[in-house]
Amino acid sequence: MSEELCQCPDCQRFYKEHDRLIREFPTLKQQQECSWTALQAFRTLCSKVLDELQKSYIPSSFSEMGDEKSHLNDSHTLCEANSEAIKQAISDLENINAHLYSMEALMERIFDVRVPDKVESKFREVAGELAPDPLNIDRILLNRLFHQTPDFPDKKNNPN
Image (cartoon, rainbow, N blue to C red; front, top):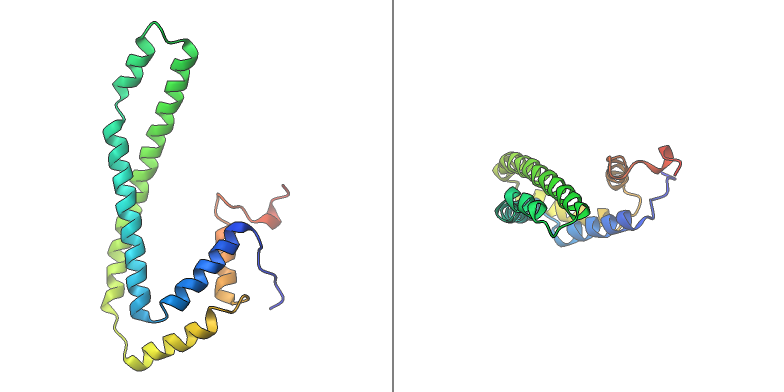
């Protein structure tokens, strides 16, 4: 395949991490554990930040700040903007947590799969071939998907 890999910093970081995960966790069992651990870490961190935001975010504190005569209208407007941003962040984190719980339920099924040692050795063999290959089709497909998300539009379709 003659297609060049994207050289942006995000993709370069992705390639390095992709290869590292394959090299360091070359068996099905190790990939299962790594994926489960990453999901749990993400869910734990996201839940903790959400809890902290919900505890520290008190809408009345923003209105009290606006009621004080020493504050200018500009600071009141800034507090309202911050309030909306925090509300949106809390909403987004709640959605992320809901998705993470769904993913966790689906991933539990992964642990039902066990393969013989012969198949695990095939995983190791393929991992050794796959990780160093910069033009691996799976990686290119993942890269394309990564660049087509709303945060990272496909560069070919975006003239900017």
